[in-house]
Image (tube, rainbow, N blue to C red; front, side, top):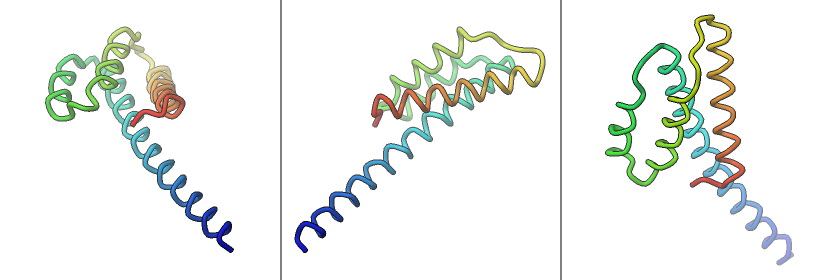
Length: 103
């Protein structure tokens, strides 16, 4: 009985940690999606870098990496290509976040 309770507590704790990590990575994915969307629209994403770093100092480094990579990315005139670039970029950063246990 004690082993069952201990296992349940361990499983619950792991689930909460995983949920927290997913929430954080959803935020990273959202930032990547938003910035790439602005980039595809021709907006200057460098301005977002200073605004974001002032608000979220502890998360600023990953955001700055996303901004730097967005600036190096090509822009597309065809809507389908731009949407694919946005989706691919978002998924790449979410995967990076999960694989590197970004918190």
